[in-house]
Image (cartoon, rainbow, N blue to C red; front, side):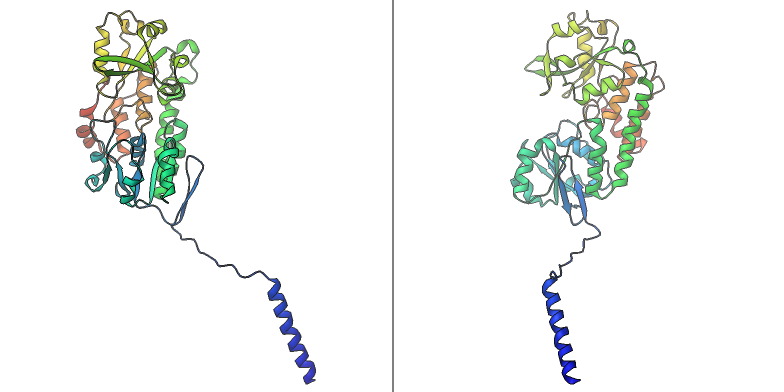
Length: 366
């Protein structure tokens, strides 16, 4: 009996050893933090963070379009710690929406690189996809996380707002902001979607730029925001065939006269568009145009930035355009109410809008 017991113990021990040898070793388990987030950016890249980034830097070409979108989130003022000094506007928008502006790092020069950004110790750099090959690649080489957005077209806004909502840990706010833009689009589209082609006026949108005393006019590419919102507002963008996909394309007066548009909209990124319009109305070369004869040449509105471009204000631009292109359909629109509604997204009440925004308004507004 004793020998049988010894034999059984030895057999059982050998069996356990054999099974252990055949079984894979236990794998270490790493518990993910409840604060961890995974962001899929505009380029389809996956960027992982142990927690929502607390130190955000904005950089690269057209960065102000990201800034204005990011500050629609209440967390932005505390989280943004660095951004370029250079902006398109002569009047700085950020003191209005960020009381912590004095504590930010402002990068000098147009081409900000890792050597300027690294001392700020960012948790993430947010930049546009067009900056990937130069700025983004250089940052990734020194292990700085980069998240890309676009904010160029209406259909990109929902996606890019969702990306910012992920980075900031506030997806619900992203949905609320997106609802504003969808609301602007849906309201306009509901009134113009059944228009016949004959009911859509010929529209020309021109950028006016002066250099060395000479004024040049140019048209936007067919796929850019300026073209899209003209068509969304019920007009025919008659310059599309002459546009250059690489950027604004200069057009001469002969071409403008050949188009002979029903309406002309003037954009001026460096001054008051309404002043440009006033000069054109007195210019004999322009007075033969149908739009000038019928007093349908307008300066595109602006405040801190113009409303025609893919900045956060493009919803205002779309609505204002609709009132000019299809006035009979949009006679109920009160543009001052639209301005108040938009700036409420930044947390500004009507008194703040009246004192800080309205004095800056330029262009053809009531």
